[in-house]
Length: 315
Length: 292
Image: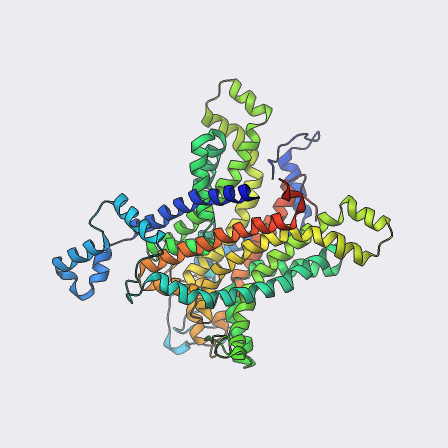
């Protein structure tokens, strides 16, 4: 187990290394000279431009720039925001909890909708219940979540006036208000993942239900409920749990648009605002941080898979 | 996942014909295909069927609700929403098809190369694909589009690059499977150069799974283009695209909800159609696929 873990972590390192090169390389795609953006009013002064280039290391060769950047990233220094002159790492750390709250709520909603629907549609395969669940999942996958968000604001805020259309309140400040401001975005964010979870739960349950041990359990005269819940579901949930951890990472990406629609000051809004302000270090930092989170989540997914699947434990 | 290697072909029916028959039996998939074809026609015939000029503004008809003259109403500049939705089909269908074609052109040769060459070539290509797949699709596309600059072409390029690692993985896996088979062994033994083996002998066998993946990828690319345009990174105003229409509609949600409803419903229908088609193709092309 220890050796396996080490090897698994070892696999991650080259991936992250290449990723860092790719993210660094994004800079080279950028049209125009960053020093000109930073200089602002003083862009006409060659001395100012030279000073900025020296400060950013832009006067060095590209491999040198990369090593300098990478060295800083390894110590947690993601550079500073060009616009507001705040360290990128600080920006990310203040915005991340907001998105984390949103993503966690969305994830819970996704599980509460997706898993039961998947079980029902597998157990009642080829009945109207199955068709309805499949249809719902198909709509969930096909609806752009930013549009769903606009439609929900139209219904629940504009027409019914039940929920605030935008804004965010921290749960430490006012829990009820916090839930009121995040429930709609969380639902919007959760529907896509709910659809994916539904499809996978259904497929895994169908596989499990056709296994010999399920037939044996039925032959023993066990009640159908026991067969479904105790024998089939336990095994079916193994791949679903793994997938869940990875889907959680995808919620971070979905949050980009959802936060934009509901004006929630999180991670997603950070990257969009940075894109508009041409605040490139922030864009780079957010992409790198997302990738890190994603890689860690895949690692957790593998560990979970090991923990719940006894057959893999001896290996 | 393994390659769909035609092991035994029933007498009198080619694999293609059998796939077509299986696809046509899938009523929902055919329904999806019909809608997709309809939208392709709308995109091509936009100048003919759009009732008004999509860019023609008019101060006398600002934010008029849907009526007989303007089926989907008019927008904040008095432009006809239906005409803009029709012209928007061009941006969306083009973004979907062009970016996925791009992703195929980048991903498939690299995947075949990785799978057939093996060794360090495989290691480098696979790690790059892994690295790209570790950033969620939309975030990578936004970052790329941001650095390339806001334009529809750049958005398409960003989506193509972002979508390519999936095809690298898929074709690499298929190439590895194919490499283990006798007929590839035979093709090599006959002295075929490696590129010929790859394109003449391996590629045709991996087309079915690529086709399925590409169809589903178009659905994803259309949503991604809408998302990028929504953020202002895709099609630039005043040119119509569904995503940018949704963006400007948000300000008038209370006064003119139709501005938000129609472009969104249209995106949903198109994406749904591609997804239905993709699911149908999967059932039709993989003889061993679960019928459910």
